[in-house]
Amino acid sequence: MVSIRPLPIPTPNSEPFWNGLANHQVNLQQCNDCGAWVFYPRSHCNGCLSPNLTWRKVAGNGTLYTYTVARRPTAPQFIDETPQLIAVVELNEGVRLNSVMVNVLPEALFIGMPVKPVFHQQDSATLLYFEPA
Amino acid sequence: MGLKGSAAISGVADYKNVRKYTGKRKFFLEQWAELTQMALADAGLSKHDVDGLCCAAIPESAMFAPATIAEYLGLQVNFAETVDLGGASSVSMIWRAAAAIEMGICEAVVCAAPGLPIPSNPNPLPKDPSRVYGSTSAKWGSPQAEYDVPYGNVAQNAGYALIAQRYAATYGYDERALAKIAVDQRTNAQGNPKAVFFGEPITIDDVLQSKMIADPLHILEIVMPCAGGSAVVVVSERLAKKCQHRPVYVTGFGERLTTRSVTYADDMTVSPVGPAAASAFAMSGKKPKDVDVLEAYDCYTITVLLTIEDSGFCHKGEGITFVKENGLTFNGSFPVNTHGGQLGAGQAAGMAGGMSQPVEGVRQIMGRANGRQVDNCNAALITGTGGIMSEQSAIILEGA
Image 1 (cartoon, rainbow over the protein chains, first blue to last red):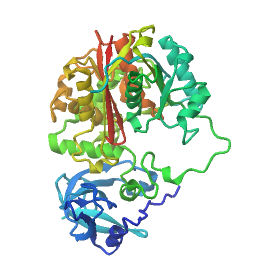
Image 2: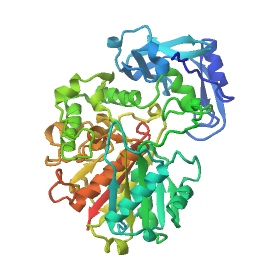
Image 3: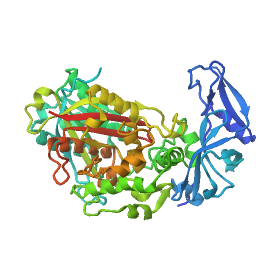
Image 4: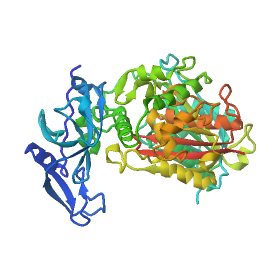
């Protein structure tokens, strides 16, 4: 069975994030009222529920919060990508996101590793991967 | 605050867990009828005593599950609830039933979780493409569809592996201690003929030499899916005293939900069972040292480790030492998952895996856990875990 990699389908709330990645920049929302950074994109701040959020361009640098080396595909759609270097990255702004580590050997990964963004073109979408900084 | 502790579990029922089910396939409605009949017979009650039910989703009806079940069983109930908390659903059904009974709106509530295969549909529907990632939602607008699925962080194994890796980096790790959890529970399964691994004990080396699925999780640290199913009957004090077994009172509960995706947890190594268990203990007036057995939701070895720590049986970060210093078998110093747990007895489909822990806790307190009975078992902590430590619940069970 040929499986197609699942791609994100932006929503009205998330378009600035995905459009940013397509232009090789990382856009995050920040709350005008409490100052919290918000990820993933939302209609309201998950710190204080204010609807007053502003999109800001950030560097996208951070550290590896945790990772796993998935030696069996997590779903058939990822069968060509084993082992998958599934990562959770904490950006310098404090928010965490799911990602994939690239340009690194599995055994070189460590929690706390400084990382920087890689704008990974996957079919019609640009995904936010990371590599060692 | 909370329960007085006057509602009790008075009957239980379960199917034998099997990996390759070859028996008659049954709809969940049929299983509901069968499990209810068995659990009521166990309690010594009749169908006419039942005036409440708690269920999880059923494949026959996407909505209106409780009314569909009530109609099929010929029940008229004053209390009905569909609980949507994944692997925590069963434990959460039981405290809801106990609370409804204490409020006086019902006297006998059936909580059931079928998990046998259903008959093959002669006119199969096309597979729903938004459900191809198991419990991970791929529906448009779901945050998981947008921020988990495209990166391959789908289903359960990766999420629990991420937790275990973070735990290891924070507190240190000993893979032999984690493996010992699976081994001790497998030893318990040798006293449970309904376990899928009955007759198949394992060693720590077996676990560590088993296939690595997602670092640091070996396949023998991950539940074995199987067919099964179970049910309990929760009753008022009045009915409990009429029943044939020792009543098992529900004296405390707690529940905590945080995130759908563990990526966004405040601290991935601190699980929501902490506040849930603290609530349950406070309500019951018990302390961790008063518990004779822990029946902990055990989708993975790391789940058990975090449940031991966060429920207060040892300090945070000392779970590995605790596991190494205690026997987790039914005759050990700290019995855990005396039926084998889902690691040793199998994880029955649907939401049934999470009903196995309360059923076992009841059997232990009733003194009916032949072949694996804990001596003088009077109090148990039972936990449920849904999603990737998304939601957890806890109940304290006590013998009369």
